Image (cartoon, rainbow, N blue to C red; front, side, top):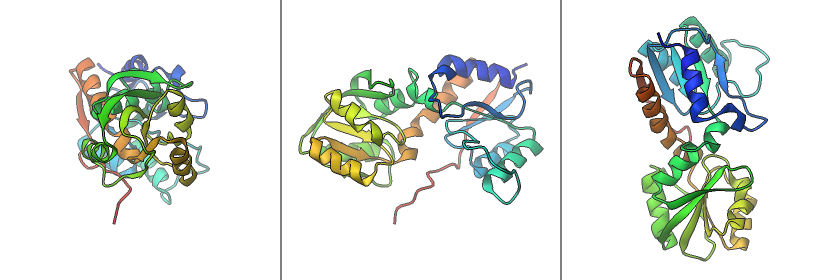
Length: 253
C-alpha cells in the first residue's frame, strides 16, 4: 500500500528539502503521512479550485509546486480561500504536499524543464544559489520573443531590449528578476523570467541584456507534467492526474 510518506520520500529524491530557501515552506502541509494513496492530483498551485477537483476525483493527495500555506494563517475559517481550501481537504481526507524552491534548484526541476521547453542547448547551472540555468539559442530578439510566447503558451510578454541578438540565454522560472546580475555575470545576453519590476527592466536596458517577463505561471507550469510523469512511473499502482482546469490567474485584455 502506497502512503503519503512514500510519495514524500520519493519527492525528496527529486528535490531534496535541504535545497529549499530558508524562507520557504515545503513538504507535508496538510493531512497525514500515514494515509493511503490511490489517486493523486498534480498542479502548480493548491488553490481552492484544485482542492475541489481533488475531492471530485476522489484523490487522497495533491502534489503542487507552490505551498498550500506560505505565511502562517491567524485563523482557518470559511471566510478566506485558504481557510476553505484547508477545510475542504480535511473534510475529504486529502493531504497536500509540495516542493517549491527545492524543485526550482534541483536537477531536472523547474528551471531545467523551462530550459528544455525553450529548446536551449548546452544547459548549465549558473548563479550563487544554483538556481538559474543558462544555455544557447541563436535568433534575432523578435523571433525569440515569438518562440517564447509560443513554447510557454503565454498570453503576452513584457520585455526590455538590450540591443543584442539572442545567443546565451539565462532562465529562472517564477520571480527571479532579482537574479539579473547573476545572469549578466554568467555572460548571458538574454534572461527569461517572471514578475519583473519596473526598475529591473531599466537596469537590463542599461546593462545591454534582453530581459523577458513571460509570466509566473507559464515559466513554472511546464514542470507539472514532468513531475506527474515521474510520480506515475515510480508508483504504477497509483492513478496520477494533472489538474484539467487549473489555469494562470493573470489575464490580459
